[in-house]
Length: 228
Image (cartoon, rainbow, N blue to C red; front, side, top):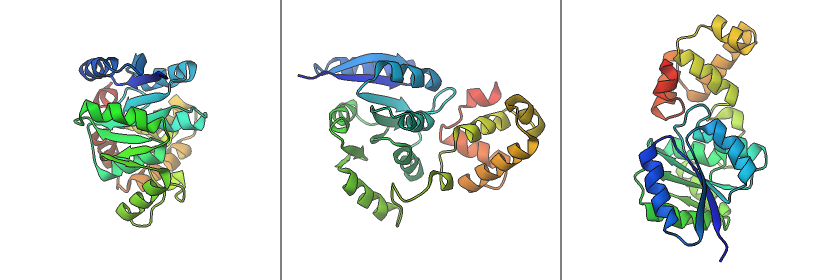
């Protein structure tokens, strides 16, 4: 029996403890690391090369959607399962666009996540209790999102935001001015303005406050990070 090596990333100890206990009951699943920070997870996952990564969206620093996307960008082969307390159609679409193989609300039964671990390592996708091959998933998404396709929409036209845009949005959430953000990042104020324009366009909001609220509601920015 091949053992499936799993890393899960969540900064809530209760959720981590419950998931660890449930996964430890499975003979073919081994938890090789538990992490509470997206940036730390990014490094550890590359070092340990797990079969499956289970990540919350709402993480300190790099959020879960960014984590999945950055892992895909560096060629990480681990199948990623995204769990979230903020479950809606848009969040689901962003998770799949980022590269997730499965998507669950945090109130999903642990047995469903266990089953998904075994399914995603076989190249399948698990969304809303349904198991898909990639082609079937694309057709399912096309029906739900009209003509949208996983491979046909460039990343710069929809969220989640790029790492630099998320960095700027966190500074905005802290009340930083464009001048302060430019100084901290070593870029020009005009570049900050350009990024801000892209953020507003991607999120389809009218101002900085709406952009911050949008990101906080979806767990892309943590309230703790915003007020630090």
